[in-house]
Amino acid sequence: MNESNVYLQDLSRGIIKENPVFRLLLGMCPVLGVTAFLINGLGMGIAATAVLVASNVVISALKNFIPNQVRIPCFIVVIATFVTIIEMVLQAFQPVLYEALGVFVPLIVVNCVILGRAEAFASRKPLFRSLIDGIGVGIGFTLALGLLALVREVAGQGTIMGPDPDSAIHLFGAGFEPMGLFGQPAGAFIALGLLLGIVNVLFKRFKIQ
Amino acid sequence: MRDIFRLSLTLVVVAIISASLLTGVYSVTDPIIRERQEKDYFQALEEFFPAIDQFETREIEGDRFDLVYDQAGEKLGVMATVGTQGYDGKISYNLAVDYDGEIIGIRIISHSETPGIGDVITTDNFQEQFIGKGFDDPIRDGEDVDSISGATLSTGAMIDGIRRTITQIGEDILGRERKAFDPTEIVDGIYQGSVEGTHGPLTVEVEIADGIIKRVDVIEHNETEAYFVDAYPEIPEKIVEEQEVYVDTQTGGTLSAERIVAAVEKALEGGPVDKDDGGESNE
Image 1 (cartoon, each protein chain N blue to C red):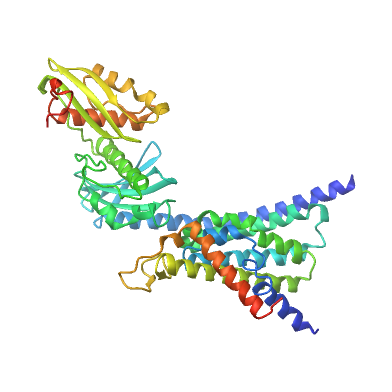
Image 2: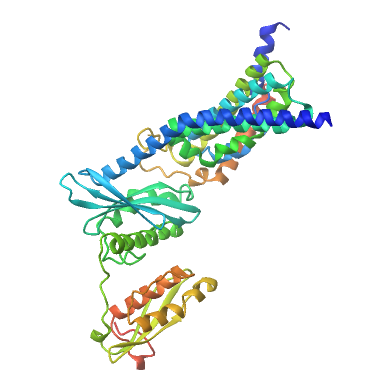
């Protein structure tokens, strides 16, 4: 196996084979909580990706300095630091998104995708591979959130690019009555379940292991 | 022993680096956040009062009230920044009132009501019914404004909150007084009135004799008992003692107290009930 192949594998693993949402079912709180609108879902995905990449890099760089016994507290402090930075940056430059994501921004700290990658990958592998891994898993997480949010917004609101009325595109005529359930948390479970089923069928069909 | 020292040192170093990083980012973003919030705030004022030139802020019990002036120094009105308990957490909003005490507009700043249900409070459809209502209007569900079925708790909370805010603006800032009931001008007799309470109607009976409020009784209520005991019999006693309908309702059961006052007000607005008719209203 040559070198670029390793990096490519690191990148694609997080997107397809070990997609955090569809394959590992990790970090489900924000997945269910913020996916009522596509913009919110993608915003959450990007924010989590930024934290994931940054924490992966830092933890990989520090892995030789951090004693094994206190590695989890150290990882959490690193992750929490980046989350707080993201929170302040969002509040300053993306206030609308910050309001929409609400409590789920600080909750990125306890998103198990991030701690999971720190523990399983970044604390063992070289820096550059950890960076690629963070990007891959982040893309996989963002894509999954985007897909779920797209389904929920189209079904639950009849729009895409909402909730801001300036950017919202109404897909159906004025007579369309949206399925309000999909805008609710319960609808998130149902939509996620359906998507998981489809993904499993596809994986079986194309024999991806 | 040396191991513990090394572990603690690592944690301390990590924490110090983290704290200094956060301090740096905070000092950069904080002014931007503040400036943006100020700008948003002034924009909201401008939206309600296009002729705004300057404003003066007053704080009353943690709520912010801005008196708005135009270029000539004339008072244009007041914008309140207040919060009310909604169905699921606090709803904070701006309420703009012109100098005559009439509502110009409502702007929801933040809320956590159920998406697709309680968030109707942000729609024009719900908010428009308040425009033009004022200090002298009852602003009560089912009377001059309507809650929205399916979202009764969220919309009802907004109605109650707006009524309280406009009363406060009227009394504390615009210096208005509620229309007073003069017991000596009311025909002697028994009066009954009821308003919607927490879980059903609250009905009071008021007896006027020789131009004096003789007694106030709550004859029917469905309030939460724990709060209701703080309002009753304290509020009726106060009304009889002060011979005044609009007594101070700040008690452990403010909502129940307000409802008793409102029911007394309604009772005295209607005619006396005929006692021989089994206590039914003769409207």
